[in-house]
Length: 138
Image (cartoon, rainbow, N blue to C red; front, side):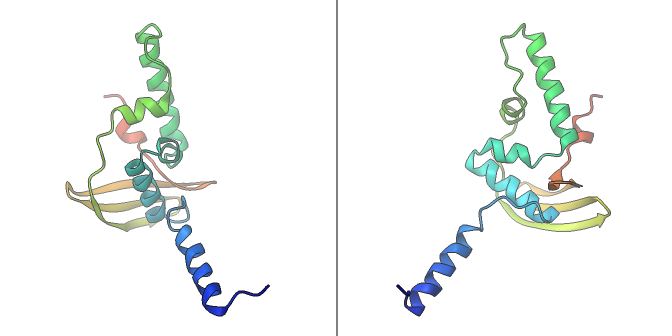
């Protein structure tokens, strides 16, 4: 059974639109947008996956320290630990590449809260958000 040409075009358009919200780590900008969309939707697992390995390791250590300090009252769950301390995301109006040198990049994020720079690193799985500098203890 053949589909009429109009149905074929509609099917292609729907398939293309369906991919718009899929996680993408191909570029620093797409990776940040994946993170932001996931946080907006409350998809903590996907948002956490966009964090760099060193960032995830630092969060695991902090979550474990909190669990140890609470004598087990707090679970050593780095995903819950991170997102319990993250306010709802501001409305992002623009994400652009500021710089890219090798496996390190910076994206500029413009939101209702102002303009900020986010450090990104390229890992085998693609571009990830790197928060290790901001997670270092003073």
